[in-house]
Image (cartoon, rainbow, N blue to C red; front, side, top):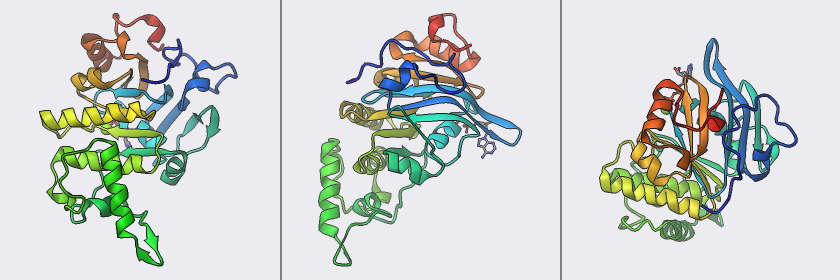
Amino acid sequence: MTNNPGPSGSMASNSGPASPGDPGLSTSLLSLRGISKNFGAVQAVENINLDIFPGQVTALMGDNGAGKSVLIKTISGIWAPSSGQMFWKGQEVHIHTPRDSEHLGIATVYQDLALCDNLDIVQNMFLGHEKTKVGLLDEIKMELTTKQTLADLSVSTVKSVRQLVGSLSGGQRQAIAVARAVMRDSQLVIMDEPTAALGVSQTAQVLSLIKRLAERGIAVLVISHNLNDVFQVADRAAVMYLGSLVSSGPISNYDTSSAVELITTGESSRVPPTIVAS
Ligand SMILES: Nc1ncnc2c1ncn2[C@@H]1O[C@H](COP(=O)(O)OP(=O)(O)O)[C@@H](O)[C@H]1O
Ligand SMILES: [Mg+2]
């Protein structure tokens, strides 16, 4: 935790265009104001106000269908928002394609990880961004960069970067997907359920990887169903219910039972009212 997000809890009561004195905008890396996305008549996410801070892990929670994946796909440029504004370091930005979000420094690790099993680790790390030297692939540079990135993240369980990704364990695959994301100088790493398919020790590895990203000043937005994971790793929490963000704030404002209440009913008597949205 390197940045103090200030006293603001949720920005949930602040709807519509951001006001000039909006405190979240001056300290956040990414701020969403009034973001909505509908698919025809289906309102998937509605009027989302959320601040994401550098060096902090924000856990995005919510039941199935709450709108978590649609929200991160909107930040990643897969869906353009139907309405609302996004601010990157206080400046309004328009993210309409995955390239737009990549250019800003947003990297998203989707649930399926989008790795190619029949390629090795180095090839996966540079897929679509291959380094060349006089027209040929610069294998040496790509291999060294891969090794360095994994070492920087203290990923020590991989024996060889020339191993096929199909032969890796779930935790190792997750680590490669994250390493690929941070190798591109990402400032915000978004992860959709990174531990869902993992066993106990692999989960611990991925959680410590998430912490190391934050220690490096990267903002991490992590979707998780697992409250143990959330309370181990998150600095802040955000809870969605039926497409709305019903609560957000420092993780210390929550405990397991209030988080469960918010996830299942959209409200909690145990969370201070200042951080519960109307
Ligand atoms: N491509 C789509 N077209 C229509 N409706 C969608 C689409 N993607 C998601 N939805 C709807 O949006 C809502 C939120 O979905 P989603 O974000 O996937 O939930 P979560 O990730 O929280 O489980 C759901 O009602 C879902 O059916
Ligand atoms: Mg989802």
